[in-house]
Length: 388
Image (cartoon, rainbow, N blue to C red):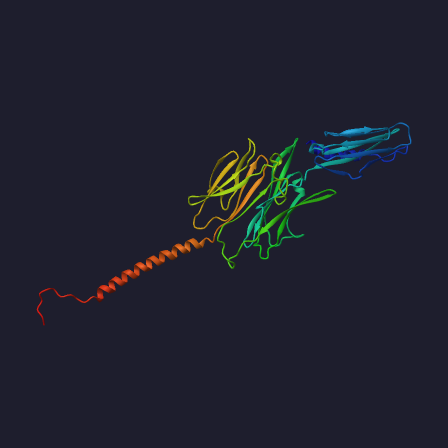
């Protein structure tokens, strides 16, 4: 309701606004744009100047149900300072000037927005040769309707992509206003060979007088195809990602553990009939990790853990499950991901069938040989029978 009144104020003020008065006065505001954009946490100043031939002149900034800010006023000018802008600073500012018996008014709409360079993608890398889903999320943004997400190859949109929809969720609160996370999902066609080294998720915010973009690279991993030599060992690509830096930027230098960021890691170990994955974070008390993604249905996996450790058991059922496993650290939201590529899943089955068939074949040969031997033996005469 308050914001609605704030947006209606320019209309009513426009009805009252006067031009050049009887004393030849005029009122100007810098910057001259009717809407002034300001990033969350940023600073700006609005200057209102009055040209007046009369001695009795005054200029003053006013606001409506908003935090006006610091004001410095003189006889013919008034400067409005906004420091460390919060979302609640969004609203209409009014400069009122008087020159003799004439009154002047100018309105400016101040719009505080949030669009940090905080993009995350899942999976954190793509593989060649198969269709796959991709999700890209922009965190802690305002004006979700003004935000668009696209998938680029070079500077062009990737062709053959199927959009699966967009999700908007409230992520955190900034005073009385909310920040959002916006997620776009796509179904990608198989990436052929030679595969591009990387795709990019690009987020673009479009506001009056502003078009700003951030980009997140998505590496492409080359996976062997059936025409190439078979994979004999499982391939792991353990990748870490958080909301403040690229997963491919250099990490902190060793030797100063107090400055190292706290991020989860995934470890694997053999288990009866399968594999166990451990997600853990060497962080202080009050942190927890939990599994958020696994091939197929996450609920189908046995999971347990507490605090900064979480286990997940992968059972081999015919073929190894293939795909991305992901866990998350809270608070903070940092992610760790692991792509598990199994051995050629038919190799063990084919070997077992071949050995079984060989044993059955040998048993059959022994059986047939025994019966043939019995038939070919000469008939034996009973003792004491007369000679011919």
